[in-house]
Length: 134
Image 1 (cartoon, one colour):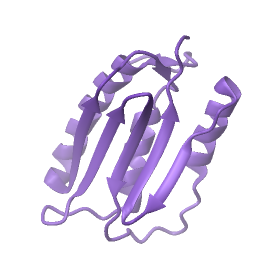
Image 2 (tube, rainbow, N blue to C red; image 1 turned 30 degrees about the horizontal axis):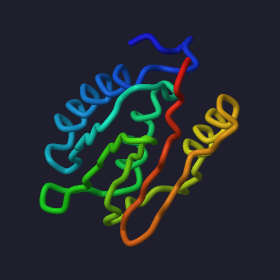
Image 3 (cartoon, one colour; image 1 turned 180 degrees about the horizontal axis):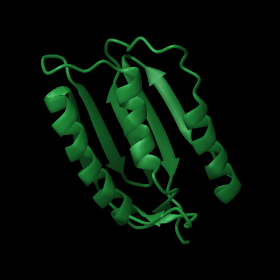
């Protein structure tokens, strides 16, 4: 996938990539991290590799196991939301939030909008605005 020079990528293209990436995660972790995609509309664009970053974020911060997996859901409607159940936290040196901050800055530069981050009731979600045209 060559997106390094693109500012935006079609949602369908990003979903195809993240499905392949999810298979790599399953190969490494088994059923400890499970992905579900709820796609009600996939027209529009997002920042390249946004979905990979959000999957990596869920893995980095949650210690999934086969008996207590992390369920990651990508829901696409008017916006695109990636959510996961928050379970046992990994021991990370310091959760800096740099990746999410950088993603937010990219969206602000492109759309003047921001991503929405919610963390409540053992559920973490990030909502990305869908950009209508590239």
